[in-house]
Image (cartoon, rainbow, N blue to C red; front, side):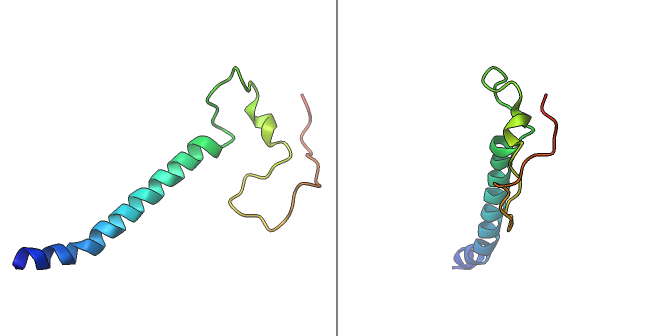
Length: 75
């Protein structure tokens, strides 16, 4: 009976631990796949930074940048 009570007390700890690990894993994978500084293949995309010329790298933006042009020079 005592072990069952001990396990029920530890459930919130395990839930919080699982949520933290899940969030950290999600953020690491998001950085690996969506970050413009990371490239997986230089053959397919030799200049990956040019892909983000007219994009904004943000989680959320209230402004639409589709009509704006880039001020960066083209090489």
